[in-house]
Image 1 (cartoon, rainbow, N blue to C red):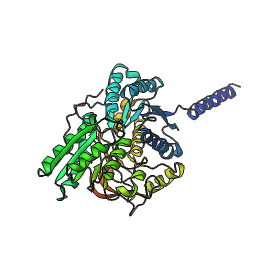
Image 2: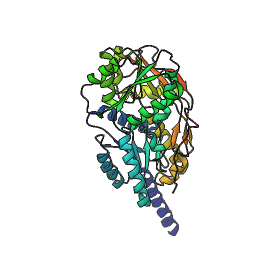
Image 3: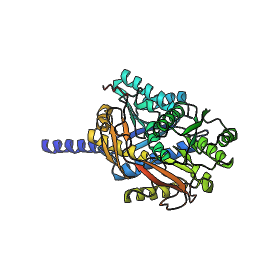
Image 4: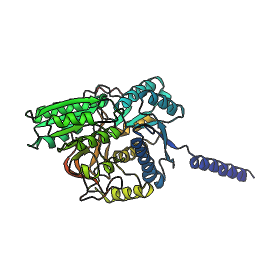
Length: 414
């Protein structure tokens, strides 16, 4: 009888443990980006890519650790730093340990400071900030902290690669710089002035201005100044509605030179430019899709398009975030001890399905990776954007761009 009772107790315990594993709490990631307002399409497309990456790369393969699923929890920050801090606190109150954000370095600067302060004061509820697109260089320099990891190349790294291409074009003698009036726009301007000055001191900067972010309805006055300046090329870090508005206006007002950009593809932008942008719009980015880098990337892209017929994978680094975080959680053996997870992310080498290796530089938590300069076209496409028949095709690649670049980061570890 005692043996039967003992056996029954063990069986009951096994059922309890099995039930606990089956109902293990999801690993939640808070997505804090614009889902309303002028940049809603950019934020919504990014959210879809995070949701798909979590399901396709992790959940469909059994989840992480003891079968935990990765869940993306969306928070609309309305592109406001103040609203972002409110949503950050809501996410922390819900017990979420991972924050992703990318649209606006102004928001990222507010979030990284808030996360650092929270983690110092609340060691039992620490969070990691996984920055997938905010590229103000300060975030991995003087404002760096242990809790922030950047998966996109910063503005200086991108401009270094972009100006290699510009410097090689002897037909470019005059350049006009224009961007959004906040930290990122200012960083793009500073980097362009620095690198052009070093590589092609003969190039004249004939315009260097900033405009209000998300508030300009008609870019005609700016376009006319660009045309009248005699510029041979334009450089802009504009994104979202500001990229489309500026680019369309510049072309419509008769500018015939190349427009070098950071974010002029996907989220409706490629479709809106269409034929007008062919051979004119150029883009610096990581993870090019034309040509597609691997069979895995092709299958992923096709599966995404099947689920979101109106969307595109235009931020492949989002998939790198999910892949690298999953690898770090698995290696750490925990999803709640973010210090252990961060320790696995530091120095990680990750083979991206989109081509090349990602190295998370430990001294500043800046991802180092290949950078591609691509051109807007309807030729030689494996995949287009916006169901438009147009996409971007890689013209040149800088391998592991700025691997040895200097950083002013003085990392303080817990």
